[in-house]
Image (tube, rainbow, N blue to C red):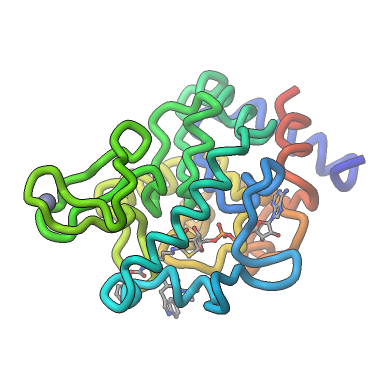
Amino acid sequence: KPIGEQRSLAHLFERVRGARRVFVLTGAGVSAESGVPTFRGGGGAAVWKGMPFNVISSAEMIERDLPEVWAWFDYRRSVIERVRPNPAHETLARWQDRFADFVLATQNIDGLHERAGSRCVLELHGSIWRARCLNCEARKDLRADDDGKRPPLCSICGAMMRPDVVLFGEFLPAEVFARAEEAARSCDLCFVIGTSAIVYPAAGLPEIARGAGAYLVEVNPEETPLSALCHESLRGRAGEILPFLDR
Ligand code: BJW
Ligand code: ZN
């Protein structure tokens, strides 16, 4: 029995069935069942060679030790490469056709939503599969074009490249975030799935949806700072709960 009380459950199903504009925000927990480690939660934070992830995944590290930043992301890419999307990703891929208006925003950089078939994913924190030039902003798709040089060099201007991800202290891609914000503001049903909801501005999106009158549902085995704001907190694993909601 994955989810709570019968009465609220019936109400939830009614909400899901009647929803037209749905906005979903996902975090690392949605990929946990695929075998991608989360950053926090489940006891302990991610660490790389003794460095907590908020140090190695920070803007300062790009200047201080770019090769080490590449080593950290290369390691994670090697993990992600070997895993597959799980039933949570698959359910969300189906939802793009189930609802009249569906927007999926993710904090994840692993590309698993797209691999499961989601089109137009708003990648708020970038992608581990791309590099970006430090000099001219050119991008490189590492799946198609990776000679193994670290750091990779820009094929336009020859400068060094960095992972095209959003590190602590950096701004989110403005246009991507604006589209997510607009979807949050105008949805009638908002799901927050597998995120500790402490990293801003992404964690502000469900607050915007709630403030604009949406029905807010959280899917997470653990309580988060958002739980108090949610109409429903479904305490369980995304890969079990989402397929259950899809019936
Ligand atoms: C399951 C499950 C299962 C497990 N099913 N669920 C003080 C106050 C307010 C803000 C700040 C502050 N000091 C600094 C800031 C700003 C900072 C911030 O918010 N910090 C907070 C930590 C306090 N934000 C930023 O820096 C952002 N930029 C910004 O604000 O720009 C303006 C600015 C410019 C200049 C100076 C200052 C401000 C950028 C944030 C970018 C975050 N990037 C990272 C790293 C990306 C690259 C990489 O991957 O290494 O993104 S951090 C990391 O956290 C990663 C994630 O996307 C992000 C969110 O984590 P997520 O997804 O929630 O994962 P977890 O691990 O935290 O949680 C997993 C959850 O899943 C848990 O709840 C589990 O229970 C659950 N779970 N199994 C469902 N099976
Ligand atoms: Zn360049």
